[in-house]
Length: 232
Image (cartoon, rainbow, N blue to C red; front, side, top):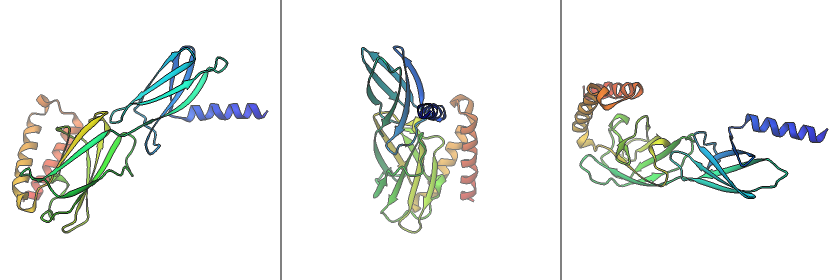
């Protein structure tokens, strides 16, 4: 009876899990992909190669380093469960103003509050002259490309403001990345907003040519409206 209850418990645990089921060499593998905070990485892809009495597991996911594990097989056991950890890639940060000058700042890469398919960081400014910008004034680029769908929050006030940014892992490479954050100084604000508004107008007019999704067009329209309001 106890054995039956234990088997039922294991079956329910497998069924309720987000584990990927991979079959190879006559064996079945339940692979759980987790990040360094032991969150499930649901967009991961697992593969298993069986060689003799050993199974080699590889797990890949956008924005993470590949994870690997080795499972030693027994002929009498056909089902295995393995948890594979995916580590964060290397990320270099560049924080500049609109003139291209580096801003004195510190980047905190604490991932608290981010889901498994997201990457979060916070820019903590330690330089005067950045008291008036809003989230629509912040430009974030990942590997020189616009980070679509990012979430930006401005925290603090006065001369020591903080910028919290959450991006999608799909924008990150698996090994090395560069994230650039551009912020306008108070003296640059009016000019930078006019340039940003011109850019969003161009992208909206050429949405089909640029192959923008409906979500991206809606986001651009929102930014456009906020910039117009700020320039009034």
